[in-house]
Image 1 (cartoon, rainbow, N blue to C red):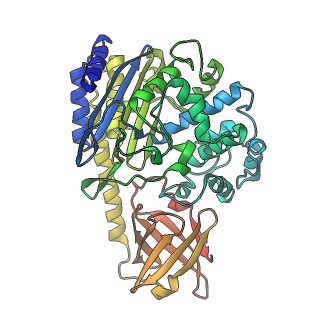
Image 2 (image 1 turned 90 degrees about the vertical axis):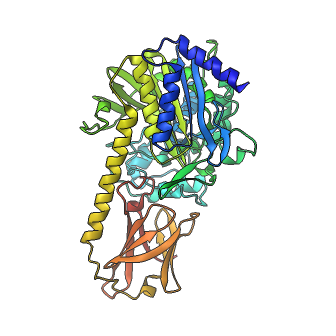
Image 3 (image 1 turned 135 degrees about the vertical axis):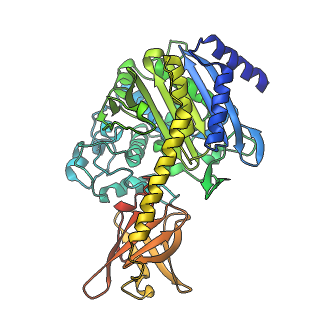
Length: 513
């Protein structure tokens, strides 16, 4: 039966008259990307002119298990969830239960920012377009590695986060604002964010296999496992509880289901039968219109072909220009998965690529742009080679930075205090408690409310230690009072490639519980 379905999709692809792309070409390209980037499994779907013209899985759902990826295999889609959160709010705007410019504090009692002006003026629109004033990824360590904080606690702790920029002055990606949007949705509807998305988006579209929690991935179901690289080897990761991430990135979906989502988006909110809508054309226009300018830089590196004259963020969607065409899309990266949705509205074209590793965004982007180039008649771009080269350059530059740091450190220096003096209870205003303990002559560091956030502190230079743990390695630097007691410590990532969600730079721990 699966072979029959795959053949049907291939026949549809053939009938679409793609420029320079055949089913066998696409198969070969995806398999090449899988091999080059060492990706266990990939799923791809294409919609064109209101029809699903291709959907297929490649590779395996889990290393060590021969079960293949199918067009119905569920992947964690990460931040592609954000567009669903925005669309759910759009349905509430259509119903008159919300306005994009309603004050958040009036709809979500108790909401507050560090800046009183932002607390008062923050609107629903502001939550969905990354201009809150928080720094890139600020507060993400309340989310992962998995913490014991609830969504309500996370929103409550935003008030303690010092802004990196003035309100509405700059684009800086923020997961916490989307979690706030989910909590606001729940406050307005009286239902959980999950219930609202299911009733207002999933059910009308027939996205019947998509869900919101890894707890819903039962044995025997068609789902992919997360993978990451451990040293030089790709390994299977454990399924983490991501319920807290909710409206910022919790959805699990397949390319078959996401194809339905793209068709509705490309049809300005209309369902396939044309009689019903998810949301009005007016709200569709709001979501697909620039809300925050995203600065662009002209690159001369391997990805220079992606240089653009226009980049912005709408409401849950990224917007940019590519060879004179507007692109609407988003990426998603979360705990062993990287995914890409990319649409070309003037071609009525949508592409989704799902992968089950977080090692490189090369596969999803190379495949998506290869397909878009084929439809637009653009030749000469070897995206697999380009992204591989970009990955290698980034890794080389990061390695050189870390080598330089190791060479320039004062290796002969040591901590100002006996190691035991650094042990104790500490607290950050928004994260909460951390503990440094002395055990068997060594210092251990633990973020008290995060799973797996425990590691060893080893002296680096002066009063800076290096922390090695399951997260990205970090520098931990202590500042002393005049009497030699500890005033505070701060953290910075060791590698320039550390994920922005490990927002060590935003932490400021002082002694005390």
